[in-house]
Amino acid sequence: MKQADLVITNTAEIITVSGNGRPKRGKEMSNLEIIPRGAVACNRGRIVWVGPETDMDRYVSIEPDAVHVDAENGAILPGLVDCHTHLIFAGSRENEFAQKIAGVPYMEIAAAGGGIKSTVRATRAASVADLVAAGRQRIREGFSFGVTAHEIKSGYGLDTESELKILRAARDLRSEMNMELPRTFLGAHEIPPKTGRREYLDLVCEEMIPRVAREGLAEFCDVFCEKGVFSVEEARRVLNTGLLHGLSPKIHAEQLSNSGGTVLAAELNAVSADHLDYIDDDGIHALIRSGTIGVLLPGAVFFLGLNRYAPARKMIDSGMTIALSTDFNPGSCMSQNLPLIMTIACTQCRMTIQEAISACTLNAAFAAGRGTVCGSIEPGKRADLIILDTPAYSMIPYHFGHNHVRHVFCGGIPVVRNFCFQSFP
Image 1 (cartoon, one colour):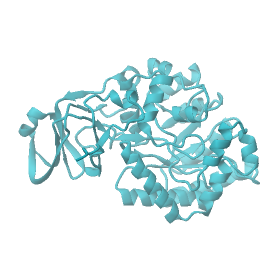
Image 2: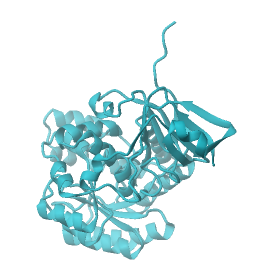
Image 3: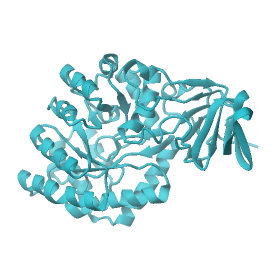
Image 4: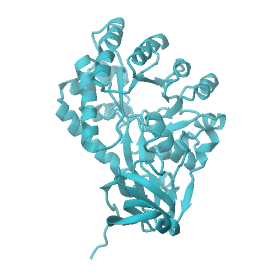
């Protein structure tokens, strides 16, 4: 008998997204492993049993002071995982958004001190406490959408102390929030003003990465491989330096052009290659061979008003492993609404609803290095759970703009409770 201090019953169904210890590839993404009229039992923040509610008494011993939660015929999903975010930054750029939709070119905005420079200035001026406070608020907003784990990238400091400050803030949030917040060093996000390309690359590789590794501030190293930013050879240098210091590679690849970043990702067996809007057949097959997860960020395409989305249908039909994420950041996707990203992926990338759910749960967890810890409802994993206000999980991308999240548990702790409106007297 499994001891339980939290049990959830009266569900329409439990969407377990079980993956048998690995991410879902290709057609497997359509298999969500659903248990009709299921129940889930947890103990000390971990799932101990999941199965048909009628079987629970045979396998679970419920502690006298256990918490009983009535799902009220709602569906249960694993907590969503936002596996590519720039969650920690200071400042805001809503004025630039207004300029952009009025037709002002980005280069003109940047020349006037806007763009990424604006965020870098604000982030450099902020204290660790300021960044922790901003991150805390954003994590709470993520909870409201059912997001119980975030990957957090640096990249808005662009000097050693500021990059370290962002990662320290993320570390402090991890200690405070008791949730999965894997950290990625992205010092090679852009070349800062008044700094030479070679000079900055030397700083990233010879000073920043060793400092990050020495302090244990990140587990991944990322680079923006794109025309006008970092070339394939420059990206290789950054990622190889990261590997030498124990940081697993990730890469921003093929966002605005086919730069060759996917081939580099495959060469280095990167954990993920992200964006992929301009990926070609060679890139797809290279990622399949390496097992690198393709993280698609359709919210950035939508927000920037572009029209070239990643060819998700071809990727999945070819057998790739695909994850979805928000790319939450102040410049190209100012949204933490991961369910809305599912809708965009379904309508613009031609993903099925089942594929989108696999991409935001189990596959996203593996893309964030947490596939054995969260992303599915299986014994031994964290009790990161969402109870919906509907028995039909397909309502999430279909009824877009409506928040279907009723309850959220993060490590067995309730962080969102009953978002339903109360009746008027």
